[in-house]
Amino acid sequence: MPEIDKDDNYWMARALTLAERAASLGEVPVGAVVVRNGKELGAGFNSPISGCDPTAHAEIRALRDAAVRAGNYRLTGATLYVTLEPCTMCVGAIVHSRISRVVYGACEPKSGAVESTRRTLDEPHLNWQVETVGGILQDECGRVLSEFFSRRRAEIRQRRQQGSGKE
Image 1 (cartoon, helix red, strand yellow):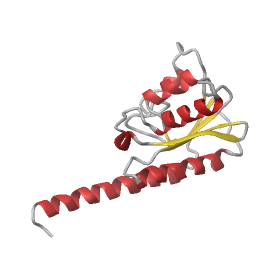
Image 2 (cartoon, rainbow, N blue to C red):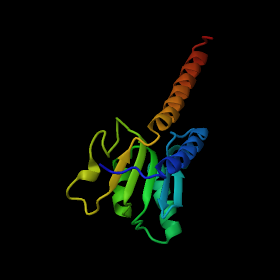
Image 3 (cartoon, rainbow, N blue to C red):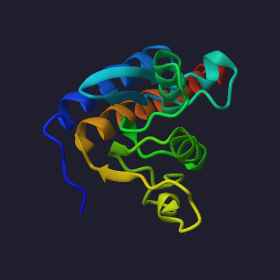
Image 4 (tube, helix red, strand yellow):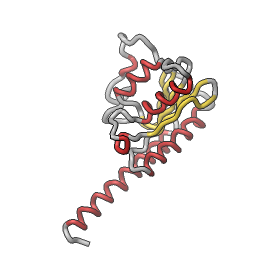
């Protein structure tokens, strides 16, 4: 079983602040931070809607930021902290970037590719092994998502009511 690092809560809290920034922009609230040697190397939050970019997931943005700062697309020895379990696309980017460890908060039952819908990182054909730890600040990460989608559903109901003349 992978070990929880003493700094995991600290860095997940940082990722949560990025998730909240995404929510404030109307994006699904997911935040990510790449850390190496105890220092933030890259950060990102979801922005596919505002960026008109289907690949602009928090993880991808954080990996891009870290690679630019490191001057190398290989991020060996780094940990990616993300508030929501990564999808298949993000898992592929994690492997290609050579991230050593992924720490995530909430599980993603519909498209999570670390443990929920499939265990992509456990595929024997992959040329890179990644340690994973899930459930760090899980309640807080889940709450940010639940509150966001609850607000979104309320807004949709309100628009429907206004459109039909109901008060």
